[in-house]
Length: 224
Image (tube, rainbow, N blue to C red):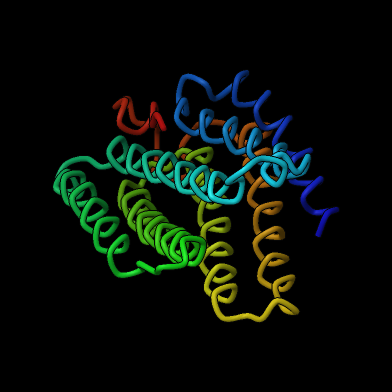
């Protein structure tokens, strides 16, 4: 488990460099997400949260903040890539996310704060998964898919799927089995990071198929 945590942190550092070099204009929100995630991961490895009063609550608060940024990243991609009859998806996706977050906050309430935050975090991951599916439907229908956007979306799907499954098991697993869902989440994180590094190392920001590249900024400049 520790090896995967170190591997994930090691992969995030070159990803930040690549995002600064090749993705800061088209993926500014995604860059902010990776930087904050790296800082949180470093603090976790150094056990900074355990050393301070209320550290665990602070950790979960930071986790939910990361979910908020990631939701904004996916929504931004959807808004930039949707066009024509798909424009209605923009307003609908924002309203759906607001409603989902509000309902989840109420339904997952537990007098035990950490269990409440764990359930709420799991539901936010599920919301991210649904948004990622919507994003993929928009990309496929556009017929002009930038390879980099495809790979960023694929990495997001891998990461949030692992989080949904892992955190769901974590709510019911005993202490002796906590390692299993945590291992799944760590593996999915490493795979997602590898996909993102490939996206900004080798994958050009050009259409995958469907003829010549579109000139609309909705596709060529899918800022997130």
